[in-house]
Image 1 (cartoon, rainbow, N blue to C red):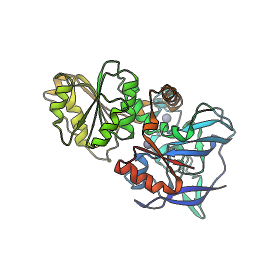
Image 2: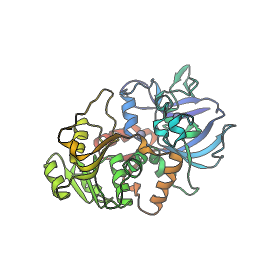
Image 3: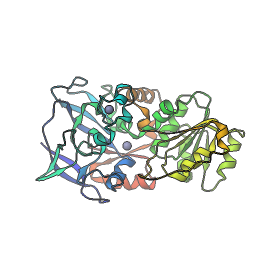
Image 4: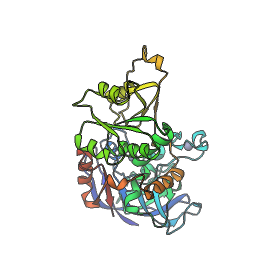
Length: 366
Ligand SMILES: [Zn+2]
Ligand SMILES: [Zn+2]
């Protein structure tokens, strides 16, 4: 069938809205008519080829829409169901079988490889094959053939135009706090970076009862916004003495938990230096392949602190996304404070506004 999609033709080139051909549904796939798709930093780094997903490609990995048709082997959804699309995984490896599908051994191929597992692509531009199945979906398009494991059923009255970002960025931030760092009520949490992931982490920390929640960034307007959804304190690390403020806010103890959402290695180091005894440090940003961080270990050895990397907030989409929808309904995960919608033909403006910080979470509507 013919679809309308935003194609990425070459490294760093703007998205181009065009007509492409979508092939027939496979037995394990779900045809979804897309209502809205979030814009995530990962789309931008693939457009810029930080990771080598073959181009041309249709990106987009925070889709939300309505099921139109299901493959013969699909059991989890039926036509008419409202769905949010998350990352894909194999379902058969040790990690998938133990509830850690974000660390699936086929994570790269299934999400960044540009094809189905059999090497085929679902998309063509005339005679040219186009990479599909980005995060099992490629949802900068009116219709997708999504992998069933990317499909998450949500309530019939769920607002699809708002919920797409639960599929990646917001799930990542919230999951990092609730699952990976397992923040407990009363703990102090520092969140480095106030983009979509950091903002979701801030909301999640508030939702589960952290009592000191510190947003750290370089942009005062974003720090002010963070206070509107859960930050109890803010630090502008460009104009304030970070170490002194950490001591002041935590009464000299350092944070219990620090999360770096920027992926900038100097910031990861700052996060590590900001935690106290038995502190936990998590990295959810996306550094470039080969990036390294150095940690002071001679003195900090005494603290018994820990560091870990985090993918997709350690979340199983089918379990975690409905949880976030419940929290949203209760007003405890107010994602509408982060979002701004753009029609498909404004997709390049959406990416520009995301980069400049004008919009924390752009959502493309179809
Ligand atoms: Zn797997
Ligand atoms: Zn993402």
